[in-house]
Length: 79
Image (cartoon, rainbow, N blue to C red; front, side, top):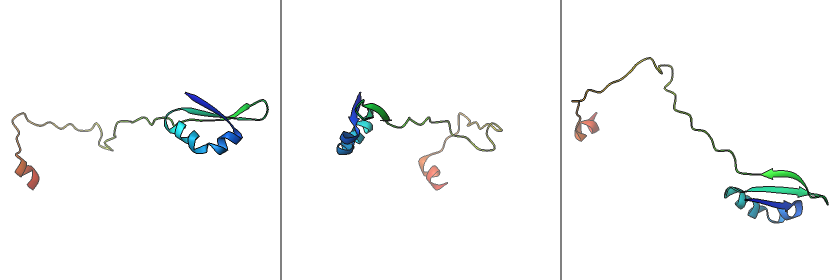
């Protein structure tokens, strides 16, 4: 949902406008008699999570755990 404010309304209702943006809405700010849109505020784009890089050894080795390998809790905590 989008809300539209004139510059004066925006100044008077700044907190309300920011609340709307936090909720995911966009806020348009208009200016002059023609109510020309001069700015649009919206939430920032969501960051894409890229897979974590392993560093300089990425893809150079493989690790495998044998099926019969066991480690009890006490041994794990002591190591």
